[in-house]
Amino acid sequence: MRIAIIGGGIGGLTAALALRQFGFEPVVFEQAPELLEAGAAILMWPNAMRVLHRLGLAETIRQHGGILEHARWMNRDGKLLNHFQLPKTEMPAVALHRAELQRALLQALPQNSIHLGHVFESYEQLSDRIVAHFSSGSSFESDVLIAADGLHSRARAQLLNDGPPADRGYIAWRGVVPYTPSSVTPATAIEIYGHGQRFGIGPLGFGKVGWWASANKTSCRLPVRQENGETSRSETDASASWDSSRRTSITSEDGMTTREELLRLFDGWCEPVPELIKATPLTSLVRNTVYDRRSVRRWGVGAMTLLGDAIHPTTPNLGQGGCLAIEDAAVMARCLEKYASDAGPAERGKELPLSSVSVALRRFEKLRFARTAAIARYSRAYGVVGQWQNRWAVQVRALLLSSVPKGLAQRLFRAVFDYDACAVSI
Image (cartoon, rainbow, N blue to C red; front, side):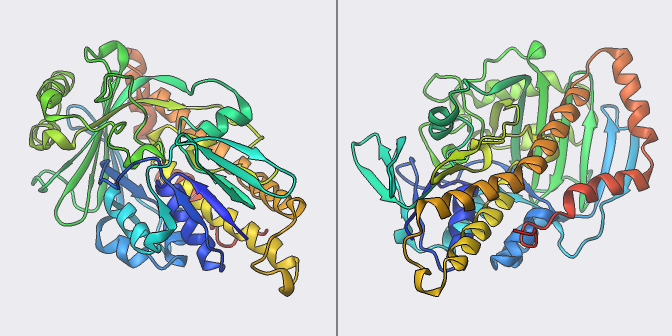
């Protein structure tokens, strides 16, 4: 059975690896002309680590990241609002550089299974196959098409024609510092709240520290631009993550201005916030406007389905965007494997009729809708509260955060962490 995957980001690469575990031989088409290391830190929560463990990558991820065991909420003056231990599961929570995750996925795939420089334009469903068309004029015929082409998915635009993603009104910055300041608490994820601004900190592997910041657009003076002058795409765009011409990393030319803007926004904040901003290499800064979309039930048609940010882009507030794409990949592969197996040994590895492929993909979409919609909704609401800037609202938020019982926090985390994409009933 021929399977084409559009997009060589985290979702697309994980989908390729998950399918290979079941004996399929998918081909990945990535628009970037070369595979460049891009991005900042990313969180692999236990729900994603279970999939990576099944794919044989969990130990590699642990070796290249920092394990998180605790969480702290603070205000910008350094006052502790609340703290608690993250739920203990058989899989850890790991923070690492996005490039390390992408490298691990790439190294697990045959080099000849990834085709670079293929800018996807459209798909065409025929009676017995589906065709992917590229901007070069070339095309590729397959039995299944998995579109993991990110926030600005062309496959989604063709399927749904539902316009651009929703701008949530704030900007996010991310960076990695090559050392660990003494004021950074080991194995702890820290979130610091201000008036329309937030700052998050997490230790990475090899003595590095990852951080993120957010600020309401009304507080920002710098436009969010791409290197080519266009409005930037989200760094979570799975297809754009390798694309040197469309990435959101900031050039050294305007990096100093961006650093000055961050120092202005976070002036007077407790350490290590100023130190981390100052210590971040200018060219490793990443910024993007925060987007998501309202959840929809229609993810695909015929032999085509959408995966990851292409169908359920999520605000970064819960650190679940990449994790959900990894879950998608596991469930999608299991659905295709089940229906290929049900076709009988004689059909294993051969072409499946379009009706069987369509049933398998619709089953995948049904299994994933409720969970992805709930997490996207919760993340959006968490961001709204996190970005409050009115002084009375800020005081209410501080009271709410300081009042969360540790048991309740544990249950909320477990509701997300305990999901096992490799054990969901197909």
